Image: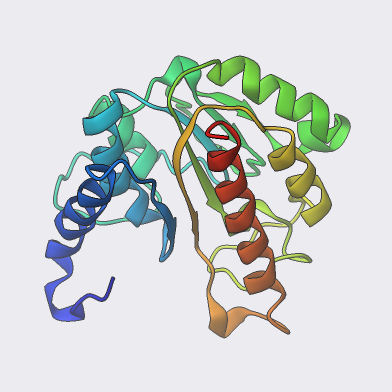
Length: 217
C-alpha cells in the first residue's frame, strides 16, 4: 500500500479497511512494514473477523506505553491500545525477546531475552504454544527482537537480543499454532549493512507463510 505523507491521520483507517477486505475473501494477510504502528489497525481488522486474538510478539520492547489519545500514531503504544480496545486476549498472549522494561505488562506473559538465552528454542516454542493454545493467533515480528549483530537496520536497536538461529528455531517450533495473520516490521534500509536485516526479515516472512499454511494442509 502507498500513502500520501500529507494525510498521515488517514493511514490507520485505510490499513484496517484494506486488511479487512483481504480477510473477507477468506485469505490471510502477512504484512511487511513499516513501523510497528501499522499493527494496531491490522489487529482491529483481524479481531473484527476472529474475535479477541492471541498475540505472539517478538520484540526488544513491549510497545505498551500508556497513550489514550485515539488520534496519535506511535510505534511504541500499539499493545496498550490493542489491550484497551479488547483486540487481544492477554491470557493467551506472549512477548518474546524483550530487553526494555515497562511498569505495567498489561497481563501479557513476557519471555525476555535473558530467559530465551538460558533456555532452548524448543522449550520457548513449547511455552508459546501452551500459552496460545488453540486461540486464533496473530504473530508480529519486530526485527529489533533480533540482536543488532543480526539485524542492524532498525530504528531502535537494543543489544542482547535473539540470534537469527534462535528466532528461526523458535518459529519452526510453532508449527501447528492457529495462525490467522502476521507481520514483519521496523526494517530500516538506510541503517542496514550488507542487506543482512532485509534478508533476516525475508526469512521471517517465509516462516510466517509456512506457519499459516501448516494448519491448512
